[in-house]
Length: 292
Image (cartoon, rainbow, N blue to C red; front, side, top):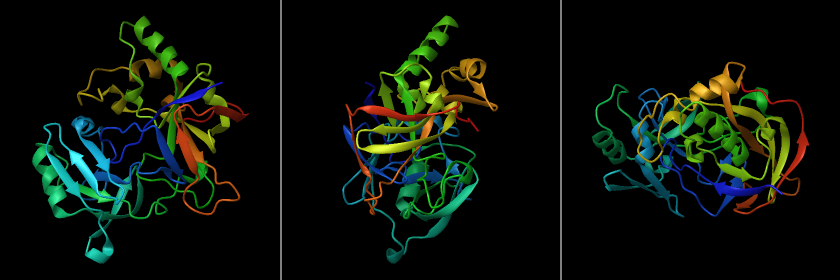
């Protein structure tokens, strides 16, 4: 029986992961996942694609929504959740051309990041908060009306399997490169006990008490070439190998994008809780999922 063996969330987009033993699933993703992001003056997301050193910054959300951010040098900043009632500035955020409403964090947070991220050509970087996670719709080609996503690239959750990671690792070693850790792919869910690449054909999958629709393979980018511990680019892999072995619709695919389903008897935001060790059951399969 496949099992959930890894659970990760990223409180600030492109910053270091958290790996809890359990996490609540909401319609737009894991609770606390990517509700914050850094942005250029026009609202466009700033990620490890632009500044790979973001991988070394850590964020720890608190129960009251307060965010603690720690720099690679150990400096800490406490950031309160911006609220319109308190005078927070409303703005628009932009993730891959999808624009949605957000709020700017306190100016001291902007200054803190500006002082530590060093010289770059991105303009004045701002920290934004997604106050209403229903503000950003998922691409309509892959979703149902009303489904939304946080500040993740495009979908509420990303799942990868250890079998596919091992298969990719074997290809890398065959080509003279080392195998890579799963953290390179920044998943939310890591699933053990499947066949390699079987996730390509998933349609519905249940993890513990939550059911998801599998809607698309994840097209990978330069972030996968970034060491998530050091924040440094390490070369062309795994993109070079994925482009040779896993090229679909002009995308280098690894992992599967998931959208949580809402049970008929639930009306709130909490759809269930995932726990390490949860059983994973594939409920429906089909043809290979699209990658773009």
